[in-house]
Image 1 (spheres, rainbow, N blue to C red):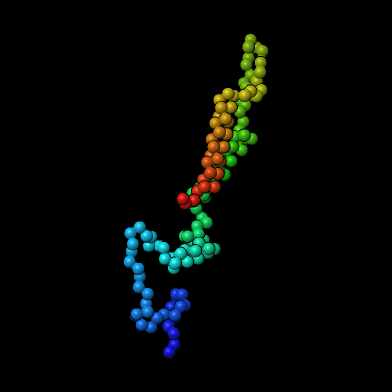
Image 2 (cartoon, helix red, strand yellow):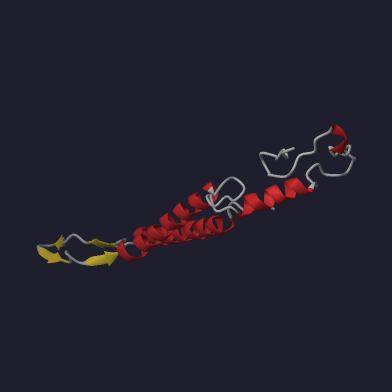
Length: 139
């Protein structure tokens, strides 16, 4: 007589009902996921490289954190290197004499804007870095 094999695991199936193992009743305080078959399934799923739900390599939090970090770095570079804080003065005519004009002087308001832009950019970069590093972790 040929053996009947399980189509999922390949093990021999018993021929009569007396050989079928009976499921243990649920005990209060015992997890329903304590059986060996569930543990084997979970370990196989976590070792897979397909990037499934159990082995999540993609995390929306990490992706958003990466974009925030890159935006913060870009803003900090812009405000540090390219933001001009000087203004050109207009010539002043006093009794026919022209004074000044064409000179660049620092504007305190633009200096404050540069400082705020740097602080916000660096802060966004740090927050984005923290999201990218620790986002998607489960406790």
